Length: 171
Image 1: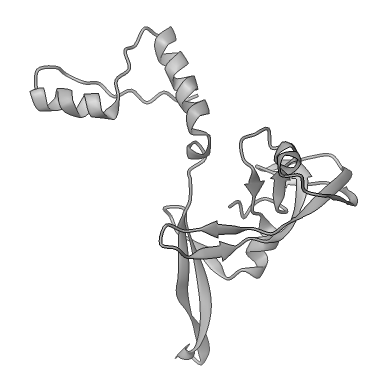
Image 2: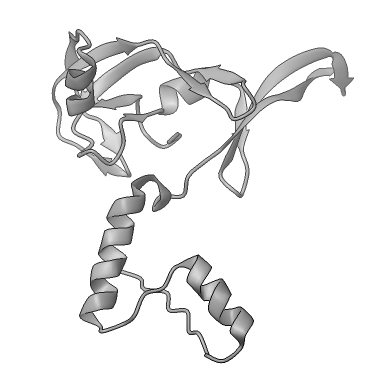
């Protein structure tokens, strides 16, 4: 989910893997991650899809998706065109709340919104777990730091013998 993306996008390689037919769109300039790309001929595919929640519910994300090389970081990006027609809000914890209009609940003679569905979003680093993990591991090894898992950390903390330092490595 990226309400700042100008459109919905699908990774070009992912499209080929799925064998989806595509059609020529038009010449357009697109925006991804705040970067405006030069105008060029674009193609799009119709993707009929749903996001399934852990409680058995799901949200329709069927739409026309523009082919774009997302470099394998994401398969699809849900952008402004989906967000503009879907009643929602995103809270400070990056949770997407999809809303329904309930005309029986009026506030100041306006219909109220009720929560229909919530999706917990990923932070930017969470969508690329292994890439981030490999990078952090390489940085730690280059600095001659020992790495231990969360389970090992908990075990060591119970012993009370060693001091454990947590280091936040930022690029």
